Length: 339
Image (cartoon, rainbow, N blue to C red; front, side, top):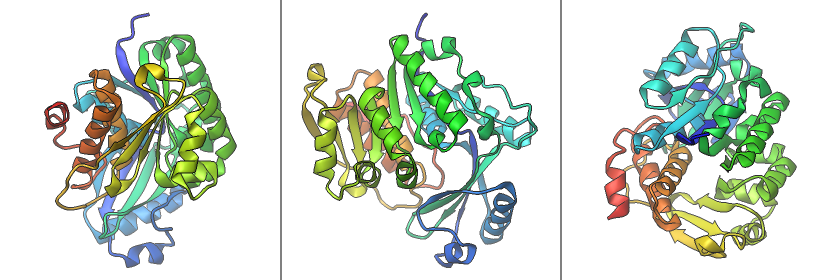
């Protein structure tokens, strides 16, 4: 089958509802700073109302892997997305939002009557985001939503670590990885969140060793994966495993490690990738998502791992200077990274 999708993301389809809040908002609402917490629908509606009382809300079709696909499409690379939506207005706006951003999306809505997902994102003055997520229709995502012909169309599938929070989602996740490998595709995994890593450490370790070609994580997530306080120690363990590892380190930039198993890419080797300059941090929502978009798009453009990493730095730098997890001016990244 012709591989007419460069990167196919699989994850939770979520409407991001974003608002700037004062520092006291988190404690008043019982929200753990910097975390992603799963909530039920009544709690989501309550937080929605609380956020609305603080500021005007921004509503953006999101989800971690979806944000990455939007970033990839904005860089001129073919992107698709698989994620479950409800038969409601939010679900309709999610599908329209993905397609309007240039992302192929064809997942059928659930017929269970479950509402579409939404994520309440409270952004404190330092730019840190704390997320309260109602997964809604994503709980219905299952193996039935993974179609072999769709997976076979993709050069790379990009899997969201949050899917491990549900057994049915996890089964679909594993099947997608198996289909991709069987049809000559690559598997990229993002660990998503250090709390998520702690919940599913053994499963992620197994995937990293056996089914993942590219692993994305921030420093905190990677340390949690290997239960260490040494980044060098965590990377040393991964040197003998399967994936290229892309570790973001905020203002320190990122590290891209090529494993011993990839001599064609210069492995074993570590590239120290600088952060891109910024004027002001406004909202860190989506920084990791857009870094991954830059790296994956850069590799599809034929960039080296180091140059693709810097494209990721540029993408992350752009998105943290405004509210929301989507890039607003993506095209100039290409010229800047390849100059």
